Image (tube, rainbow, N blue to C red; front, side, top):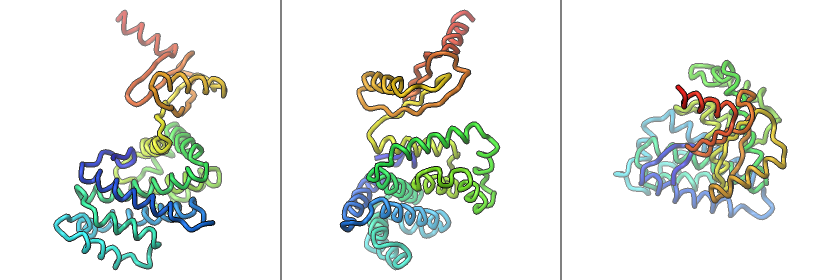
Length: 284
């Protein structure tokens, strides 16, 4: 398994992540009757993000936990001794399972834990019926920041004040978005881990779409599409690609008439500007 959030993992890490994700899902499924899966997912995801931050800071610790020459039980015991009472029982179960697994590198262990944190949060949003909203909010925020380069630079500044950046995120999105969206954005701003902010948001939106087993089509049009036009376009793309397609819509008057559609690496350019560019290339 690979993650659009963490990038490509090597074989051993893919197997480890798949095994630990099963533990994560078992933990979420085993939530006590009457408890909120969304709340449990939020707690689990937040605690996993905090451990990712710890391992990012503590090079020796992450190397020890990813050292396959050490017995798995010893690595799990280290996690238990270090984090008991500091994270919940469910989080500790996921972490000891991760520590017992064989990872290709310390970096990929941390990548895997971050991927699990994202999964926990998205599962909670999915079961609360909010996954569509989270996906859309992440995509729209990415578009906003792409158009406001100064704001994006402030939030991406590695030497900037962390609390100041967090406060800016709260001011920007505040109560306007789902709590899951805010947690994911805050983590990306606080711990970019080599990622650019806008591509990071796009990757999170794609991860939400993947959670729904749908591909993402980035659609650029000169004006807003009606609900009927969106439904018709989604149905057409589903026939073309033989799978459900989630539309991420962007308005750009520069495209003229028609649409520019990107699905993965494939671009369908039906815009006036695209046709003019094609003509210029043909006669140049």
